[in-house]
Length: 216
Ligand code: DC
Image (cartoon, rainbow, N blue to C red; front, side, top):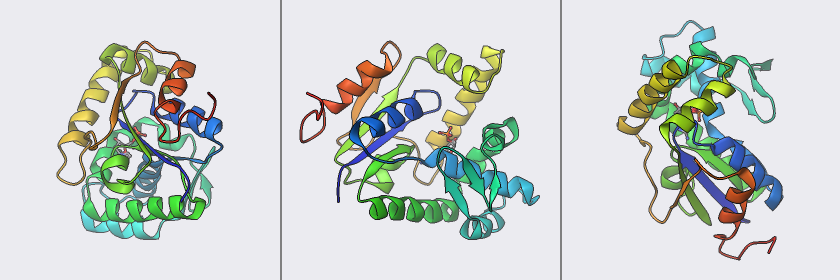
């Protein structure tokens, strides 16, 4: 196995930006596991299935065909924009709370890493569940105001207070769910992204790689 980097943290802490930059520097592929939970949620809503119905949602998760990359495809349809929309954002925590959905997506995520013999994987449970043996585990945090501003920009929304309360609600749901809640993994390095540029963060993380910074 090559290098595996696990990046975890709540919404709007800068996971995707940092993960993509790191992957570019290390010549590795990048997997956004949040996009996978969003893709399943999109399929659930399209099928008219109740997101709280664990059995029906799990059954759908097991058969849906997901491609997650620069674009996201769900059963062959381009869902890149839809998975970031308000309907999916509102329902994704309920979908991600079902143990059957998690088992299915964790298996797919591990297969993704094994096929590539490494990669930069971002999510909520990467260091704790998906890749507990990762070479490097990073747990990102950021000030609340910074997170709300970033998410508002991502979602092209103007009401930061509303975005902040959505973030708080989703964090609460993701951190208190019974199965694989968001928490810092053993051996993870906590990094606060509030007041650093992406370049500074990339350097900081590369310095922590077991083999040393490949750019130094
Ligand atoms: O990172 P994001 O906001 O796109 O993630 C969407 C949701 O998916 C998030 O509210 C929690 C869930 N998720 C998860 O439970 N486990 C992961 N590894 C990634 C995301």
